[in-house]
Amino acid sequence: MKAAPISVKMLQEHKQEREARRRLAKKNYDIYLLLIPGVLFIIAFRYLPMYGYITAFQDYNIFAGILNSNWVGLKHFSALLSSPGFYNVLRNTLIISFGKLIFTFPLSILLAILLNEINITPIKKGFQTALYLPHFLSWVIVAGLVVTACAPSTGIINLVVKFFGGEPVSFLMDNNWFRAVVIVSDAWKEVGYGAIVFIAALTGINPELYEAAKVDGAGKIQQILHITIPGMMSVIVLMFILKLGSVLNANTEQILLLYNPTVYETGDVLGTYIYRTGITHMNYSYATAIGLFEAVVGSFMIFTGNLICKRATGRSIW
Image 1 (tube, rainbow, N blue to C red):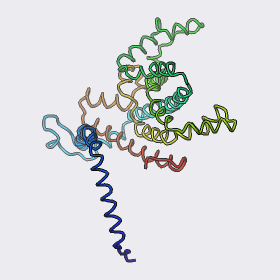
Image 2 (image 1 turned 90 degrees about the vertical axis):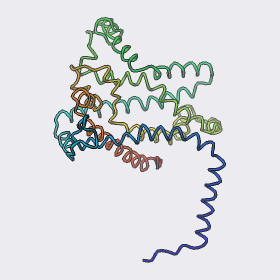
Image 3 (image 1 turned 30 degrees about the vertical axis):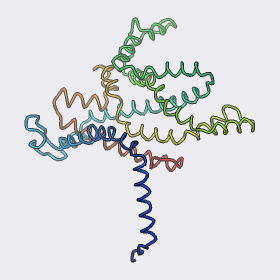
Image 4 (image 1 turned 45 degrees about the vertical axis):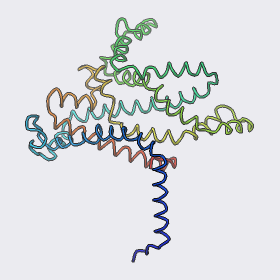
């Protein structure tokens, strides 16, 4: 079949569109200038470091450098996929990451809805400040608080357990409890801050919808189910897909500060595994292969999550 000829009208419309975009860019040049620092930051700290992924296909030697190290192809990926320890680490990463996603993500949405229902401004701002504050504490401080609270003899959690007649538990040295401590401490730190995006989405809902619902006799629960949640669904889908993209990132900093050799069985994740093999054992190429594996799986999860959300809700990133 021959391609349809391009008409003069189509060329004119295309030219008009280009002129309209050019005028819009010229009119809003100051906004585009504000994008420059962010774009430069992403290029410098996100794209340029990708050059280092080359070492995943080499036996990297720090003295020879990237250009002069020996190429070994998929050797490190083969070693990675044939290592029994890797699958245990991958399982731990998925359990902790999905645990955080399932536990923390809905809590952020619920918290945003509850805060939106508070009509007294001083009280609302007070709650917001108290809930956002943990996010701005470093994990070093939070880990110290968690270790103190979970101490077997003097920790407040075990004091409560003993008060009700239970036996003290070494939460951070017990494989049955360590993942729960990681997930709950992450939720305490991040739920409040995660609600900010959803609160912003709620401000875009037309208040007249709630007034009309009240006139029709809808209660609070019905308003939330039929107005609030559908109104913030686009943001929920966006944040959910982005969370899926980082499903193999179980927050290495948090776990490094909380875990110890006795809980490697359930607490060792990809990030800590990379740290031990890449930094401690100086096996840089193997660690880079793990990092590249994590990046590829993260990209796959984003595309998969986008497809699922598009088919299930009709909303997606693209």
